[in-house]
Length: 277
Ligand SMILES: Cc1cc2nc3c(=O)[nH]c(=O)nc-3n(C[C@H](O)[C@H](O)[C@H](O)COP(=O)(O)O)c2cc1C
Ligand code: SF4
Ligand code: SF4
Image (cartoon, rainbow, N blue to C red; front, side, top):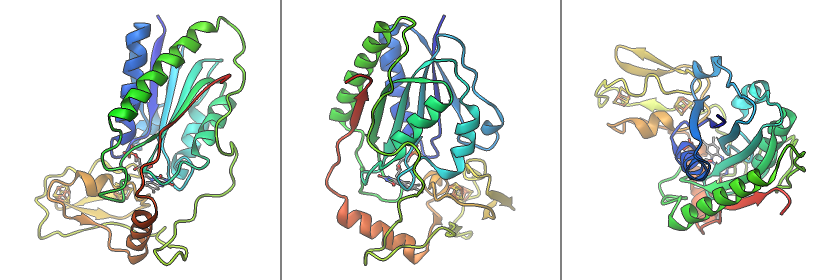
């Protein structure tokens, strides 16, 4: 029996929440089982997803700097080996823009042998900010997502061994640059090397942050985290700390957040694409 297989990267859970809703909406109509494959943590990226004939694939990722997260690119490229499986591309973004991310994801999926029937860019909370995209997805987003799920299923049911034409989505499928973050002065913000730090006196040594870093960059020093590797600024450690003692202090990072909050506070719409429409 064919399954819906959801492959996702979701350090703080926003992407997973949307992917789950999409998968469950499709599964209700198709009466198909849903299976999840996370590639968020380093250990999870040691395993490749397995796609059987007839499986429908949902591939979901957040947008980082207008593209799919740079450090996940190799995994995505190497783990998509499909044989014409019908699929849906899903990106989530924090109310700035999804730029080339959706087109890049569709390109990678099609290079790996998937046939994309639908693609969606959903607004979710921007993990840098307490206000940007704060209450997204909202009721309207969910209604639109369910409508999209129904249209995708209708499209899937209309194909019987036919070759699916290429889907057209906004953006470049092989972009060569990332979005350059700006400061509130509009000068480029340089926080590539920024890392969080922990207030060890207020840390309650609960251990929650120790195994959740997608880069495996948090070590345990007497129950307190030490940030000693690559940081992709995903915010998982900061947002999941129950004592709220993890913070970024980099001034360019904070100036970028101020710029985002000044310029991107008006709600953006989710965008949906169906092949042939
Ligand atoms: C490093 C980084 C870069 C981001 N770049 C963008 C961006 O270019 N455009 C945007 O609208 N949101 C951007 N976001 C916001 C995320 O796309 C959004 O918060 C997403 O829902 C996070 O997914 P998760 O909850 O599954 O971790 C960025 C977030 C991070 C951590
Ligand atoms: S250290 Fe950086 S990459 Fe690791 S969880 Fe924290 S913010 Fe994410
Ligand atoms: S999650 Fe917060 S309180 Fe818990 S060990 Fe990590 S820094 Fe300390």
